[in-house]
Image 1 (spheres, rainbow, N blue to C red):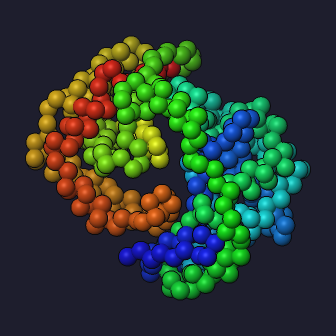
Image 2: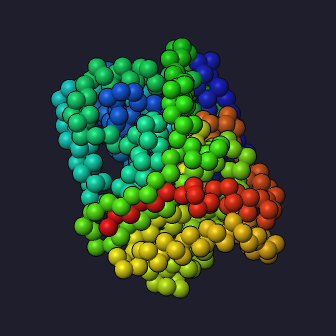
Image 3: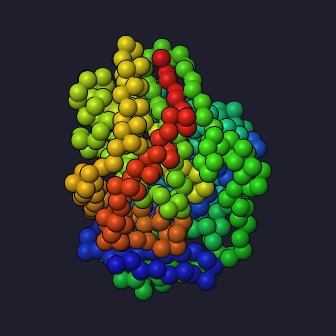
Length: 419
């Protein structure tokens, strides 16, 4: 199903052919906020904004209109470990997308007048984010949980840092991190693979294969992470905090360590998290906290695996009179999953539900392009849906309960409340 190729300079390509008239194409770069050093916090995200502001060949106006002008959509995002630039367009415009990506990723000039304007845009993004407690609480949790480890970095950075970024600083950071060995070109669309390889070679093949890649986690930060472990083998530091925000609701987050991206328990924990608080209305948290007691509108559990750590969070927005009771119900559900094994029928139903959810997610070409790009970046391979289904169906009740017992222990959980 998937086709792979590596250019001579180390840039990798992953491709799945479709019959759609629309092609989705993106470039994943293995650099995010965790790779920032010193006063660079926020620079990965700021570069994601700034690469659209001018190159050696184009002004910002021409960049904006290169894809939009033919009815396509151009965008980018930054996470703690990756940056992705991507576009969706009619399949006939595939080369247009690839050529533009190569231009902005290797020839950006960061014009000072454009950068100064973009600083104000990003500062307003920070302000918007701070006015959204349901979003802010996640980063607040991670900053406390990961402490001085680079994973604690807020992706948006600080206003002070953003105001002080210079074009030279952006160029230095990009030159250090945006190297071919850290790049994956991901495409889902209607073209033939040899043609895609030729186009990638034409527009990306001429860039140097020399790697300036720093280690993903330096020895000092590895020591910090290990020293904060409250349980052997787990990452992060346990805490409990209440912050006064003057909001109508109490926003609450309960969470803790979880398997990292390469942990053999990742699959079991992924299914466990979906049973607990996934998007379906029959998740245990939705049934208990919302349907039975009416304590909230939204309650969910999320699991984020990083390359060398993992974290899960349970979020709910509840009335100020109900958050303590909601906390007890959530803890009760965690204990139940840790002490009462799923019946074979319960497990099979959960497996079928998750398999269906994965299929629906991957039915979007854009979602698939992004998921296979990230997978190939980290694993140098992409599992097919059949392979992922096989792994899900191989799980046993003991696998699920073992993951719950390890990660849902009362003495390893952290609590954050905005009241």
